[in-house]
Length: 237
Image (tube, rainbow, N blue to C red; front, side):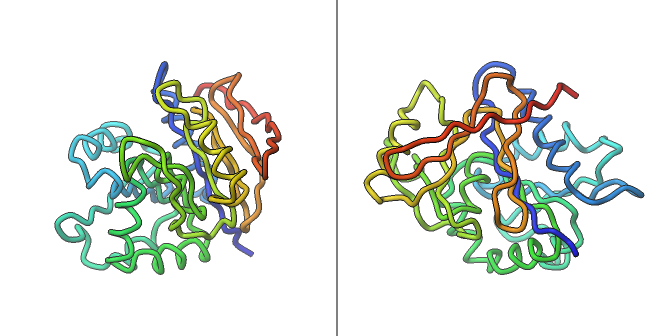
């Protein structure tokens, strides 16, 4: 029986940002494919299909022999003739960061939520960073509405928890804000990740945390309590 998998990460915003690619490669490795390159599709909706991000993906994975790389863009219209057919043919989908609020609005306008759920149920690995981590959960803190951090609770909700990304970011009070929102009931209990940490869910349950930074942590937050999760360290590829 095929497992339903989600890999949700906080990309690295400061320091050696190249190690985020190792987390992306780890997501590709989760696909049960051994006899051919993994079909790997990048979905940059959260950044409005920014051409610079598309160029980055092409440069990073376009010539990678371990994957058959593609993209799905939705602006100004889908770049593939049959979105459902294209996504169901993939082994791994990677959702980029950006605005989770805009991401969900555009996906729902294109009926992508239903298509993605079908992919997930059929064994396609669903993965992403930042907004692409929040989206699979009920929600989490976001600066998509304004310069401050507000509660977002309109995610896909396939995972029945909230999610805090970039939990150790110095530029914003993400750590304290997430715990305050959970303690107040504005967000349900959930998992937070520091930069460089990924959460692996299998069949809708938390499986493990992994990290490309040796001292980075994940946290389970419920009420006014938090539990440290020490990730399994992934050596540099």
